[in-house]
Image 1 (cartoon, one colour):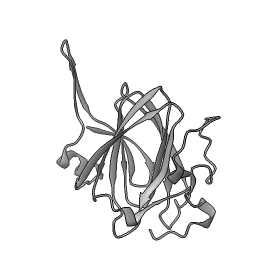
Image 2 (cartoon, one colour):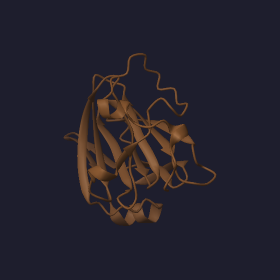
Image 3 (cartoon, helix red, strand yellow):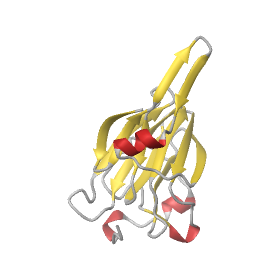
Image 4 (tube, rainbow, N blue to C red):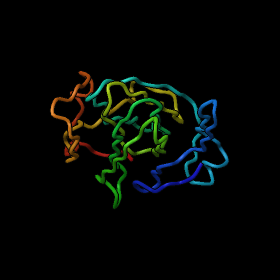
Length: 177
């Protein structure tokens, strides 16, 4: 596994170890020691996945303290544009970064506490996996409205959940991070 670049402070684009031969592909998605050395320290407490259709936007999600968490996300099938919004008080507050993740490129994003996360599915079906450092706590679940922080999602007819449509706008958000 290697660090490709820093997308936002302490938010890393990673390339996992990938081995290919006549049988197919083997990918190591997590190695505690390597991740820790790269600054992407993650004590995994929960893992889950989502399957989304083209033009689905999921986000911008995060959990409030004390249930906030670090995440490692990657797309194993299809492609997404992964979007990050920095909610941490300081010079990077409000900064946005995005990167395309796909089953083909195999890239992963380490997302520290205080970063809102979302994505738009670019293909007919996209499978996203998430590893988190805390267990999901519904009472701490929070979000920023997807179109309230100046990011161009490049989607004319996004498909959204009722929950995501009801998130607060970024301008009204008071950060606990």
